[in-house]
Length: 261
Image (cartoon, rainbow, N blue to C red; front, side, top):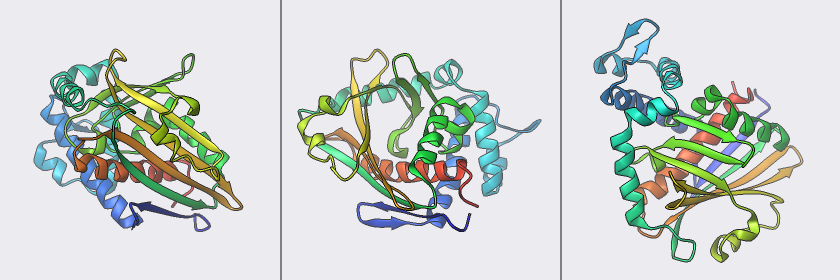
């Protein structure tokens, strides 16, 4: 829609539509090859695709094939197919040892939108967490994204920072007052709405990261400051890559909300 304007800033650098959509294309192809490598018969309708066939998909077709195939393999199915890769990522995060009491690295992404209200966007975010197709459509590397509303727990599978192998996490909602001092120091009083969570490996004992997102309504839209806090020795490729992941995901949210052409 022509009346919707938006911008994404990552560590002071602006990313534009063409850059984000090219990265979406590349990650869709990557995830299709990855799924094939893990035993999934990648299909376009009734036709099975070879690795070469995947590389000949156009950007829109890659989205269609990617979403359809991920939708066919969610939950326990994808966990079983990727069990060795998830085990590898589990060991990776156990060694890094996340704690709010230690020095942390941070992925930061800022978003400014006009032409879409914060209420409208929050509704889309809820759909992202409760409707499988929406959750899979906002980022090529989302495998499953669901919420258990009785305890507010989010379960997801994705390669953090578009790096390494997918990680299976449970994200528990964290009230602002339970955040550590370093994260509280980043709280902006001009942003009245905030949401935070703590991601754990299966079992809830090994922490991985803390997402902390802040929002404020504006006269014609809203602004957001998204951040994810990581262990001190997390590779910079993850930290930088996840700032991009956030931009892609929230840009995807605008598209899913029907606000962009």
